[in-house]
Image 1 (cartoon, rainbow, N blue to C red):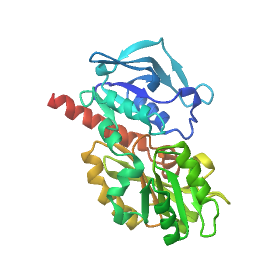
Image 2 (image 1 turned 90 degrees about the horizontal axis):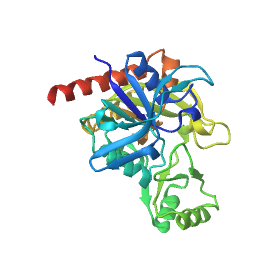
Image 3 (image 1 turned 135 degrees about the horizontal axis):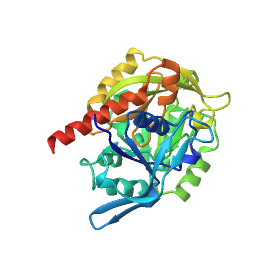
Image 4 (image 1 turned 30 degrees about the vertical axis):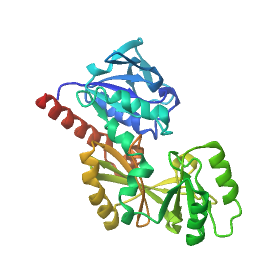
Length: 320
């Protein structure tokens, strides 16, 4: 198709790891297809009247450590004039994140925002997954410390985590004889007005927490993340080891169940987390894992994502 103008809303380019960052892989693929790229940080978004702009730089990316991007002169970019905006800043999913989705909703779908900002706002990962309770381990979301303690008493070995956290931050395993839960609850609720999520601990996490990437609701690959010794979390951010993974029949059953909802809601690039037979999260804000899948499987997930984006842009232009 004709080259597209693509704005990428993300964290500072200089801070990324080019060997693991999924946004960087998406930018490389877009550039290889002839699309023009601009980079901006969400703090430079501005709405004035009906015009949504960002202080942005045209950019070129390359797979060279220490020299992986170049910026052109800064400009005030009218985002309604872009063909695509990739919303790829990292969580936390807080009021700043929610505000950005409201602003980007002003230009979508005439400018295709990936993922759909309304759906991202309405489907934070630890809440969207609760639409499929039969696919999940026993789960509780609550502000009520007594209910959380009752859940712990019922299941004995649980994991608690902030509802809007990411990257494994603030995730704790609480064993049956653990004396820290009361203090953890006190600490959390003294600092935050947000509820906590509690889930039954699944021992199969020792064999890995599988990240499955779906594009337009279809699974395209997976990577297994194995926790290091002495660590309950498998996130790569906290030292988890990436291993090659294949999709089991149960994985495909889970994807078949959730796929139609993802397509319907414009969630083009999604990463789900599966531990054993259980779905634990549906990541829609800034999912990762495509570089690891590419290395293990010899595939190009970024190309599959751009195929889907380009098809959506074509349909939008034909319908307008």
